[in-house]
Length: 161
Length: 255
Image (cartoon, rainbow over all chains, first blue to last red; front, side):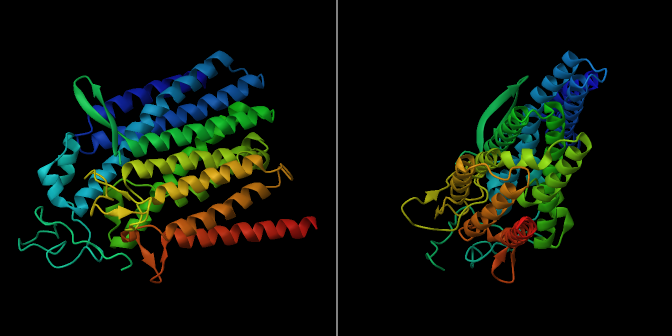
């Protein structure tokens, strides 16, 4: 189990690195990014069980168990960061949903941002008071989703409304 | 605020490190480290505790993501919306992590309720740090407000910057509230440890805190039910009711 934990930890590191590098590849990049923390967590669980068995004298090597645990825990941090950068991704995506022109102007330093934009994911209907005439209303282009024109700034909202 | 904390260069390819991801990762690590320390001090099996934490972290992330997908589905009517976007809803993690940790602790014969009762400050502190991620990322933002400590998000990557108006610092309210709960439970005399009363009391306290904090949230787009309550407010009511009923049942038994 200790060896298994080490292998999973190393695989998690490889997946995290590959996931970060291949983030621009649809599907593959996402799968690798999310596989990394899964592998690291599995390694952590295996390492924990191995340590538990080693302490109980169950035939496991304590040093291997600790090695596996440490490797998996070390892999878990970058793996979580890579996966949860989807949190930042989510921020970017949501921002683009709310203001699709933002994506067109600044498709981001990361190719994944451009991918999100070019997929043309439809933005949601804007809640009041943003969905006022000219702001967040559908443009005239057929098939286009509601957009905020870049030159227009949202009107000042009245506090309490 | 700071959606992208920094960038790393991987073989000439720049990749961002998101503030949200960093804060959540630190929060999870801190909580797990403190719980492992609790187990060590209680002379429980640390290896088994780490394995249990691994199970509950995995189940927690899965549950919070599933809840996000469900909420997005309910909001937009399209099940693909949640799948296309990344997102986590904290309340989704509570039942799945609780079930996974209970089953794992049972299989390892760990003193589950004892460790859980003593880990309440660690759970609250880790959650407080995770909420700072919302502040950095500009998600879970507050409603428009022009009070003395209002904050204005200007980074266009932050959803709270659309529009860029002064807002309640809602993630900070919850973060400070959670830190206060962490200190309160750390200083609270340790009684009836192992009965689950402390963790139930924490659940009830958090439900009240979350219900109140939700009233300052500005991202109403994530769903409003009965024209008044957000998804998390409904979850708060359910959690509060569950905790109070369980506490009352325990008191009735021990009385």
